[in-house]
Amino acid sequence: MKARISSERSHGNRVLSNQSASNHSVLLSDSERQRLAKVRRRIMESSSLSIAAKNVQLGLSDGKLTVSGWVQNGAEKDSLAEIVQGALPQTQIILKVMTLH
Image (cartoon, rainbow, N blue to C red; front, side, top):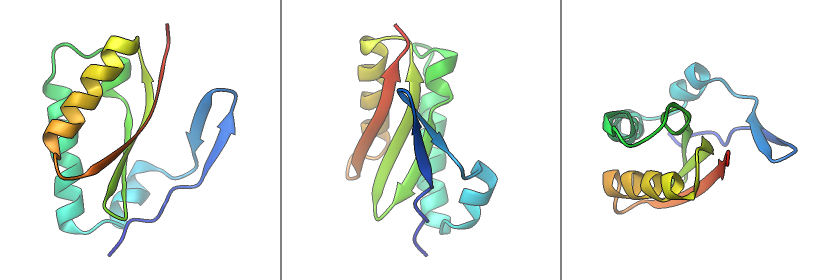
């Protein structure tokens, strides 16, 4: 079963999702949930990421992983991208991450 693309609307520079995380997980297959859990685990294990970076939203649709949210700066954005790509090297990553500073 494919994940449903979340409904998003733009609010200034922020992207707000109208779909809750618990509702989203029901729409994923077991393997997709495992892939997302692997990425989330790698993000949470990183001591170099801020709380903001650890709270990014993850979505999986049509084999593409979307990462959205806020990070402290450009260096942290790069670190987050490396961690995510390292967790799922064969997956296309769509990075919708903005910096706070």
